[in-house]
Image (cartoon, rainbow, N blue to C red; front, side, top):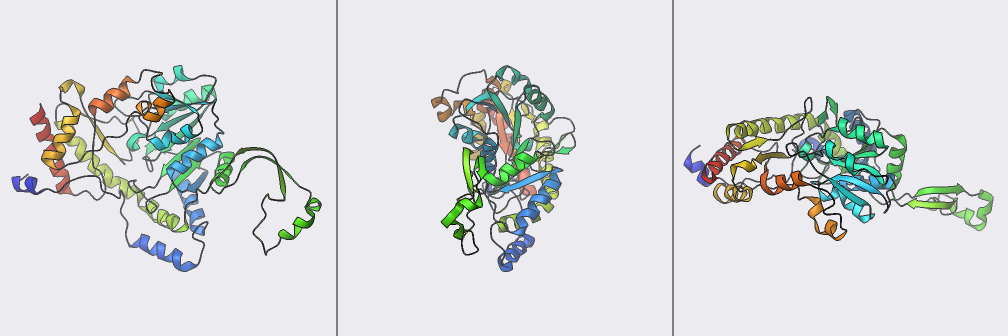
Length: 415
């Protein structure tokens, strides 16, 4: 690495788009716009759902506006209420749990495995009570969580596992795609993800037919509860509104509601987004291979530098590498924050640390969910050890070379 290259290097940071778009995506958008098909509920939405379900080898996929929408719908499907409890890993993104806060569900934080950054199954059992209704886990960075162990616990207590798969599209657990054997799996196609549907978008994947039908209703403003069909003869003067001249009356006059449990909202994915998603899905495996290649080169650097360690991946699992995380061993005595500062100020490489422990967040403290259990692994890793590197199919060989030099130099200078 020449001194000139080092001195002239531009700021290396996350690319604002995590995938690669090309002429095929532009052609798909043009096709939809010129077709005259609806820009919502067009045929590409159904096709994208079918193709995504096939990719995951699951029965049902329901396209929605974001992973946050998918997670919100999951809480509606489970009809979570204020008296219920949900176990959630302590280093989740706020979209994993903010819909639970909105419903005033009690969030019980569980500690993580300090080497994988995923939920530690051994810490779950003692947290389960009669009020526990679900486990919300996140496949951190695209690294598959220990699903077998977690699901065994869930089945034992009769609770549902909801997977935040925002990072994990294309990841595999024990040779099976994430989502294949899920109760409810929520995927993201936002701007930084391995594939994107024009910046936002999500998918709910399930093998439960009831869940799938409820999700379709909730994404389109439909209420959930108990209703009874009215006798058409009782409509009287209102029967004239049941004609082609008027919007469908829906349940305005046709039904009486006995019990109303949940209300849906507008969480639909647009037709152009779905059309782009279909093209992106065909590219997904090749895009992940590019990320794997970059991650392999990063890990080679990390293995060569004393005091650093790579993230742990379970046997027979495939990391999607939406994020690249590694660790600065606490025993080195090097201050992690100083490492981050030095990398940016001296080497023009910006690092983002994800995710701040949720039990220490302001809203969680306000609701007094903050200090119920010992979460020492999550706190130690986040405050002292966790690091990341930019990863994207767009990163160049020269950028990877610069990053490698910067890591070695930073460790040497701070040791």
